Image (cartoon, rainbow over all chains, first blue to last red; front, top):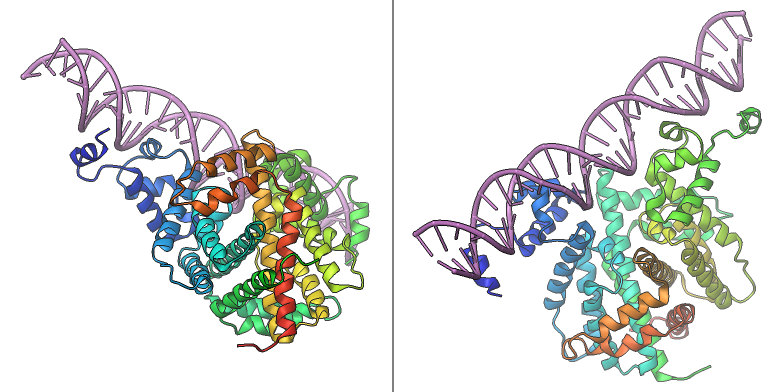
Length: 230
Length: 230
DNA sequence: CATAATATTGGAACATCGTTCCATTTATGT
DNA sequence: ACATAAATGGAACGATGTTCCAATATTATG
């Protein structure tokens, strides 16, 4: 009890779960996924590595917490309007941009199934899918398809950016390299990949992402229009 | 040149890229993602850690190669018939089962964008989507949606299994725990998540997975039926 | 106000990891 | 046969996550 009072009376810049998470986010954003280290983190917080373990369980816990903070902010910054379909697109785009801005969130989300950050997204998506008029037994599949697409594309997009950064290229140069590699594949074995290599070279990630969202939304709508087919 | 002759004349159980990859797969399957270590690997192969680096660039390279071996086998074991839609479902299910059997493949795939294992899947999906009759400019979005859904759900499913194993539970017990946690969320803040908690408890992963695939296929078909909407 | 009890800190130490280095062994070509 | 190159295996390096514990700061109690 008296948590607030205590933290106020503590030394000026005392350690806390929040301050540790905040510093972790800054570190992850500036130095990438491998930049978060208990040593660099404790150095930035002017303490020792051991002190951190009083406030957090382990590194996995810390990463999930940092990820949850980003997701929570993103959900807050994405208000819901009247039209469910527009809300779903805004929600999807919001998460896409958030993962793009904080690439480490993509992989962190993949390693914490059923945990808090995922639940936040699930809930928001679910409410809008429900508002769309989907029946109870199809809601889960619809939300699952959306959730996985969003996190899948977002994560892959972020992975591209990170891999490019590691090799000292910017995103377009990296995609150029991928397109070039795909163009040199055996035409007999990889006709499709070769044919889309050009589309990979010059495309807009966000536009393409939204096209996929619309594709899934169409599938959901069609499921609503003609229910219980088969 | 004369690679074959050389490897034949080498000592009985000589090191090779293939044998290293094979041992890595066994290690990953039996001991999980953290079970692959240059020391345990070199021990199993009766050599030193340094020797491995003559055949492999680094651990990331090794992991991608092991992943590619699994994907290649899966693609081979999934023949294509006459009906594109059935082929796509078989392909999706084949990858789902492969990731379920080798959970480490899920995360390995996420870390190698544009590389060989991903291209194999992309190509097979692309050929079938093309056979489905999708127009050139919508093929990429359609394949992207399928690919991301397959890898997304597969990866999440595998992550569930691994997380459960770490905590000493089997998959159903783990889902039971997740459902229980979701049931105790605040009804005002998380109405949707609470309402689907029951569906999480007793569901068939594969059936649910296929439902999502069908959802996306519906979206693709509807895009074909009424092209150039907007 | 003094003193005991507890909460929190900081840094040394440990086990383990990926990777590098290099002396040594094995195979190949002349 | 000898020289050259390919391949090996193990010691050593730097860095990591985590544990441990003596020291300190804060709170509760007499």
